[in-house]
Amino acid sequence: MATRNICRRAYWFVLACAGLFLIHESAQAQSKIDQNAAWIRGVVDSTLKAENVPALSLGIVQDGRLVFSEGFGTIDRESSKEVDGSTIYQIGSDSKKLTAIIAKNLALEGLLDFDEPIGTYLGSSITEEAHEKLKGVTMRLLLQHRAGVPYRPPTNRRVDGDPMLIPYSEKDLLNDLNNLVMRSEPGTDSGYSNFGFAIAGYICERASGESYAVLLQKYLAEELELTATIVDPSEKQIPQIAIPYRKDDRLVKSQRWNMGKMTPAGGVFSNINDSATLMIAQLDAYRRFEEVSDKGHPLILTDPHEEEGRYYGFGLGKTVYEYGTRYGHGGDLDGFASAYMFSPKQNGGLIFFTTSGGRWVGRLESQLHTRLFGEN
Image (cartoon, rainbow, N blue to C red; front, side, top):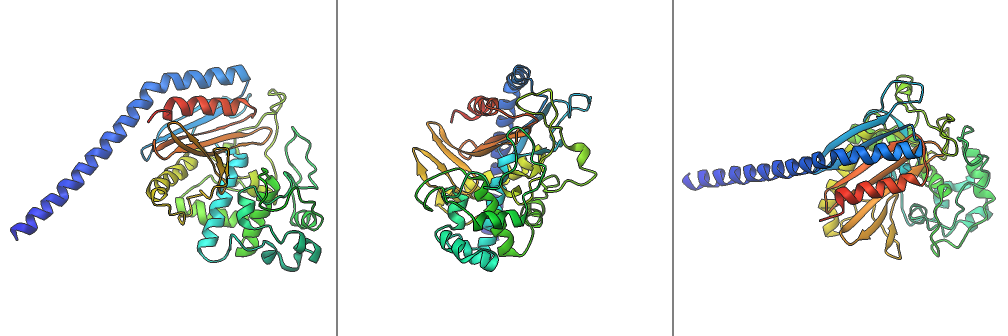
């Protein structure tokens, strides 16, 4: 009995110490953010002013918490309603990581094989000639941008700078597959492809029998209790969506994109609160699983193809720096723009969404990430 009591006290002592350590780590993280808060606000304010960008929402995650969440600007130029962590934006190509998470879930359930030719899932929807042309294209290659398909759909009707208002239909996608001119032989070259991720999202639909919107709800919104990560905003959510502005003239309003079957490549909506929840879960997964090279977890999107020290896995880029490894993705819809970056070793990351894109987005992300997570 005495031995059991000693063991019990030792157990609770270890738990208490662990709890104190986590509290200490969390306090340190908050202290670092507090020390940098004035700098953060200053660099964001000055960037938005210099670029004439209407609004930006920023979230910073550290040690399992959203430690900084603020909005800069208003939901549109005529409004006095300030943006914040609950403001909804269309996140552009940052949607690709969500598509990859859906695909990994389907693979874990045995509904999808990453190395099976995609024609397996298309059946008689495409011609025999198309089957022959696509015989080397797999889901793995699509998600790695190595499938050899064009950057955008061949029947793309959108003019650069304008929003996409005519949705890309299933008929459009199948017609493009049937008449496809490959950019390169599958697996021989890397080439970023929005069309490739549209195909990947469609394969997820065919493999599961569910729409992309339902898959997003099932594997992300319900799993992580996300309320604003959606394909089709509700009437209640529409007033929460920030108004985009053209990046070639930031005084001119643009519109939300209606992407249809291109949604898996860039049409999802989200906000800082939801994206921070996902990042916290993803950081936890990477810190627990990456060290033992267990890539089975659906949030682990590392399946790299090496190219000069940079990698693109399943919807996430990976870059190795002198101070660690960074994962992430950005997005730009000629109006909305986004950045999502995290460092497992530093156990933190940042997210921001904005209402007008451009090269300034990458520069601001780099400034913030280097200041906050650039040292071990």
